Length: 414
Image (cartoon, rainbow, N blue to C red; front, side, top):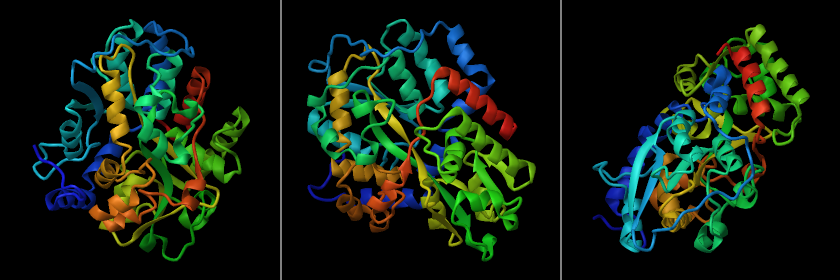
């Protein structure tokens, strides 16, 4: 089993992570799997389908535990997205997981079986609804689904005594989302920021500083892209309108939709995209667009024409989150794994590989040992000024979610 040097990554590990950062394999693949695919699934009746399957109404509970076998069974079953964990040069080992086993004796049975939030929910829903073990001790899902699982009482409250490092090192901007105040049930795996990206050559001197510029500047007509994820496109529009995406009303939402609809009707917005905006941007078909920061890290490395900006009005941030499902057999082991990834060294190694916002304070020095450019990149480690502009979309009731997604689907033609 490969082990770390006491103070630094091995040269092989550092080279592997630099290569990953250059190749963009982690960031582009991760985004292309439709991070928050509630948009399509819920808009075509997903919520109704969930009710038909006998899911109970949302209720605030403390989750359901079972006998914890962590002491006798030195294992933890971890389900995650594809390309969301560091790998070595051979792509056969996950160095941070190997180190966790070496240190604790706990083997991580790591499975990349999450391709889509709604699809994964369908996998675990029958067991959770029946009060049965899902076979998983730790899962990683996007914030809107994490919020739903907590509302349903289908995940366990975490034991703070097993998470001292996580509690101490969790970045302030991620500490208390409205759907899990104080992070009683979840800890973020990574942050996902929505920014404005642009192609300098395609802009040809046109100034872009805000979402208003994207929506209103006639010189950009037909060369603007917005995202097919409702929370990102509507959230950025709300911010530009002076509204807080964490506190908006139905009227505010409708006003944002109307503003986007006007831009669609006038031909200002070329199209709404998932991850495929990356090719439009690099080719210059998009002069500017909303983009996910993890993609921009790679696009900037590959294309000198691509850059990004943070509007003065702010930007949207969501999270992918670690939770322990009800009836998990190895809750304590899962909590130890969460805590481990809040240590600066493994957190830096993970951030260098996956390119997204690291939710762990105190990582910069360790990340600089791997890649100094990454350590100074605000899209991976936001500085205080950038973090202060971060905003999150408020959690939605089932009724709101259905109504909002239907309106957004009509806007985008989904």
